[in-house]
Length: 108
Ligand SMILES: [Zn+2]
Image 1 (cartoon, helix red, strand yellow):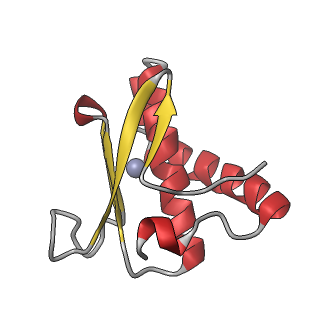
Image 2 (image 1 turned 45 degrees about the horizontal axis):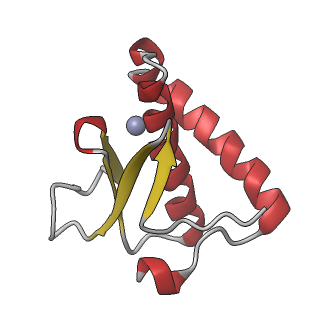
C-alpha cells in the first residue's frame, strides 16, 4: 500500500485539504504542530519538522477527522487518546512502507 501525505485525503467521503504551513503564515504557533478544522474540511501541518514528526502529526490530524466523522467528540477531545492512536497507526504504516510522504507534493 502506498501512503502519500499529500495535499488532500477523503474521510467518510468528505475531502479534507491539507495545508503545509509555516508558523509565520498561520495560527500554527510554536507549540502547535498541526490543527484540524472539521467545519472547513481542512487540516494544517507545520513545515520544517523532522520527517518522523511530520508524519506523526499527519496521522494525529487524520485521527481527529475520523473521530469527528464518527461523531465521537468525547474521544476526539482526548488528545492523549488521539495521539496514542495516531502513533500506533504511524508505526504500523511506517513498518510497511518507510517514508510516507513525497516532498514534491508537500513542498516540505
Ligand atoms: Zn490534537
